[in-house]
Structure formats: structure tokens, C-alpha cells
Length: 558
Image 1 (cartoon, helix red, strand yellow):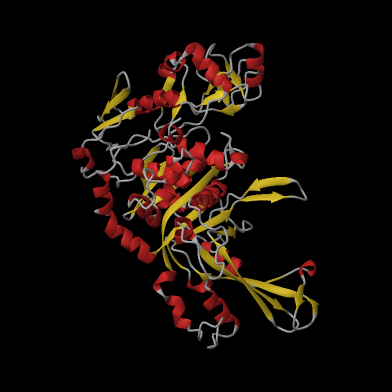
Image 2: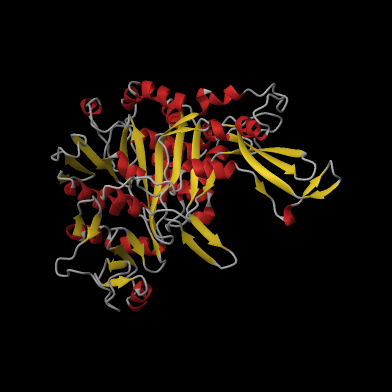
């Protein structure tokens, strides 16, 4: 197998899907094209003309997730889908009625097929008001809906074409905004990718060719390389093509590096974010041990996201303090929901003319205060105090020694109780600013308050200066918000991007401009901030750097 073929390999289908395609090819897919219906929100669902409300043919339930067999068109719920394939030999592949995604009844898992994906996408284009012509290898769509402001000519399939004139057109949407197809409960991945693609340091790194897939030694040896997969994605996202992109190769590559997560089941966006950055770090061949001998890792992951936490453990008897430092790439914050409001309550409050914020609502500043406050450790966590010569009760306080260029704040909305063996999701609204001053949470500020803001020598780095905490590097601006809606077991991830002062909702394949109030009222799960100087620099560079690069990307892997 050539390096190129290995690099562009799609996730392998299960044996049941392979057997189905050997027997029926893609005829079954095409026979369902007339049943696909594009709704106002842009989603594709199965709509049966003869059935107003689809029900399970075994139990007549309609509230559960329903699947329609590709062969006999029998509808089964999630409880009876396995029974259907056991009673009907070979009836293994079905379509999720609500999501229009392939599902293997025997494996009880969603599966991905690019040929089925092409059928669904072509229907999506028709739903957008675009005329679609079928060809031997491609589907050509010509814009007829002015509201969507898509490119005047788009092609999906094995070929790719965007005219230079279209690339230079002054679109209402910034270059780089492109939907990502859901490959089977992969909204968790799409949400994180949208945030990373529009993170200025990462965007500049990949678009400037600092990791070039054509020169990567791992790719020339036929090995999987996540940075190469991301190089393809950045090229595709900023190519000028507006048709939804399918990041199947990145998903496959990530599966190979994280075999315990290799499933089409819904995953956690935060876990994917951490896993993806770790894999990028490892693929670039950097040492896993950060700050060893005062040498920091220089991979793009840690250049962009790495900061340094300070932990002070103080003996409550003699006052001696033990200090340790730990690197971080994100900060997880506890959300106090005791007096919280749900996002629905906040929206209802605004619509009724009431205030949109309340003193009792959880705030991001309150979460950061809680993270950096001094807490008394329990009796089982007594400090072995060197000054006292025995174990003593102690207190612990966290602070931020060094801020990263990109600050990721993770809001802990999922609670798991080991004693009660229960899990729940916290739906409380969190008030957060679009511009964030991190000065109060720096070690210099925290320690200064502890000692009454007196001048003192600090870690051998000179005297503490209270004015130093107001440096521009402590000022951050938000550029992405990953949200989670729904229940703990079956939720949905969406990303809101802030580009040139406007907000855009990235919901899998669909991109819409939204008002600021919509973003403020969402259930934020991950908040992405960039240092103010990084945002200002990105605004200057984006106007000419990325647009000029768009002409350099003739290839997009759809």
C-alpha cells in the first residue's frame, strides 16, 4: 500500500456493512434519497409519506431512537433492532430515522460510509435551495439561495473545484468557516475541531507549512500522523469550499492512537481535546516530560496551550509553606449549581423583560475565585512538615504562575458519585465575560494578598511588584465556546465562534450567524480565550495572510 493510500484511508467498515455493499452496492442508499427530508434547521431526517409518526414495528413505541432497515424498510426501536436482524438473516444495516446515519444492527453501533455520506450531502444541498446534477464521479451544485451565501459553484465527491473568482469573492462569512459532517455521533469531535481550526497560533502554524504533510517523514514511511491529518483539515477548511467536510481520516487516525475510544458512540469533547493535544505532542516526537531541567516543550500544543500552576501547601501550626509547580493545558472549574439558573430560565427571564443576569447566578469569576481560594485539607491529608518534624494539618492554595497564549477553561458539568453510584449533568447557566482579566488569579496577586501586598522576594525572581499583574498578557478575549445540550447519556455539542466581532454557530455541517444573546444563554462547557495581543495580531494577519493562502490549496479531502 502506498503512503498516500495509507494516509487517506477511511475508517474500515464492519463486516456486515461490507457484505451488504457486496450484495447491493449503493442502490439501497439511492433508493432512500427521496425519503430524506431537509428541515428548516438544516438537518436531514427520514420522512415516510405513508406514516405520519414512525413507530417500532415490534412494540409501536415512537419516543425512542428508531431505525429503518435498508432492505425491508421495517422500523425498529433501539430495544428491538437486534431482534430484527436475528429474525431476518442479512438485514444488518439500517438508517437512523432522526439523524440519517448508518447503523449496524448486529454490531449495535453506528458505521460510516463515504458513499452514503455523499448521498446525504447531495440531499442537504437540495434542501438549501441548490440545484444538483449527478455525474459519473461528482455532484455539482449551483447556488440558487442567496440567503446562504455559499460559493457560486461547489463540487463534492472525488473531484474538487473552486474558481479563483469565487475564492476572492467578498463572502459574508469569513474564510475558514466550513461545516463538518457528523460521521456517527461525532459532534464531540466536530465541536473541538472548529475551535482549534480558528485558534490563531494553531491556524498560523499549519497554514504556514510548519508541519507539511508532503515532507513529513512519518507519512513517507506510510505511518499514521495526526499532525498530517490536521494539515489536511486546515487546508480544506481554508480552501474556499463551503460544502460540509468529512474529517473521516482524522477520526480513523485518532482511533488508532486511542484504541479505547475507537467507537462511533458519543464521547466527551473535553476528553477528546486532551487526547488530541497529547497525540499531537507525541507525534511531533517531543519529550513527554515538560519543564525538565527548565527546558519547556516546543511543540505547537504546548506553545499554544501550556501554562504553569503553582500549589502552596501551608502548615497551619508553624506557617511554613511547601511549593510545587505543575504544567497545564486547560483548567477545570467547579460549577456551583446550588443557586443556579438553567439556560431556559435565563432566556425566559429576558423575554419577560427581567434582567438577564442575577447576583445569585454562577459566574466565571466566581469559579476562578473558588479554584484559587485557600482550602483546608482533611485529616487524612496531613502535611509532613519539615519545620515541625511531624505531620500537621495544612491548607492548600492554587494560583497561576504563567499564563498560556490560549486559555482553555473546562466547566465541570458532569458529576459522578462513587458512593451513590449515580451520575448527573449540571444544567445551570454560567455567566462569563467575552473579555477576561486573569490578573487576580496570578501567583503574584494571590501571594501578594496573602502577605498584605507587601514587597518581598519571590522565588528568586526579584521583588514582587503589584503593578506587574496588570500586564497586557493577563488580558484575554474569547474566540470559541463549546456547548453541551441535552442529557448526560445523549447530548449534543455545538461550537460558537467569534470572528471579526461576529458570532457564528457551528452545528456539525451547518453554519449560522447568531446574536450575542444566543451565545450568552447557552450551556457553556469549554471556553477558549486568547491573549488580547494574540487576537489583535490575528485580526491584522487574517485579512491578507489566509486569503492569499487559499489560492495555494488545490486539494481538499472530502
